[in-house]
Length: 348
Image 1: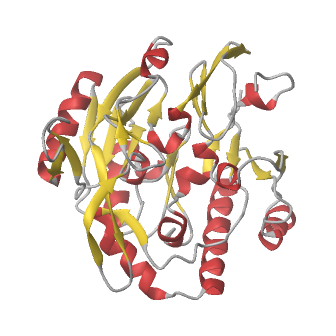
Image 2: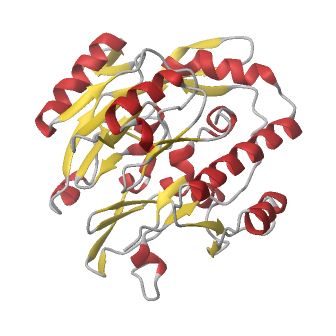
């Protein structure tokens, strides 16, 4: 059966905060974008263009998808009309009670694994249940930015970061492992606050792995993890020590990631550099095709070596404003449809 995908509802309302946050490794790239404009109408226009570039690319490679429609008062009707009239897109209705961020970025609403659906327990109420041979679980890892998955392999962070920005031990992994999913826990990436004028000194945690890495299947049939070459992570010393963690630099971080991935036979790669923020926030489809942003030749070179140049599809324009202004990329906007949940009488 052909896989159906959900694409986020086109809602574009950039926050007015002067300070933004970015991965420590990508703060320079994000600052460059931020300095280009502070005009809200220009930012919205850039977001509209990038959204349509992703939609156009999905249509170009023949991906079956539906655009979420939920908030009549917030949706960008101009973009929606272009998608329907000019690109022949179809919609799927979600109840307006859904939190806008959940339908604008469906990756963080649900994670779909073989015979298992994890629903983000922080934004949706769900009962543990069974439907169409899928087990349905409420989980922090339903927030799909926290995990990188391919078939029965899942990568997550060794610490979980909740809304208060404090970290805790992972929760609910045992139930996921019981379904046959293999899990490896990677070091926790660090973020930092910045503005046009400068960068804050204090780093904090970020458990969304898809901002710094991607997990794809190669033409060799094996799994490959591509990681931001300048990634900084937290090295935990133990809560009884002060401080409880210290900054782990890129070289040691990559070494640690390789150690964690080796038992799962995942080969780790690093491009020479990143040229576009969140350029590793790409998505691979079941036929092996990879949809990624244009403008990052270093990442494209590594992806091409792994999957083959003929399997790479680049957006017609770089996806640069989404990462800086909404903290999202291509993978955040496009997610596998949890079909049992979309059918009548699902356990939700």
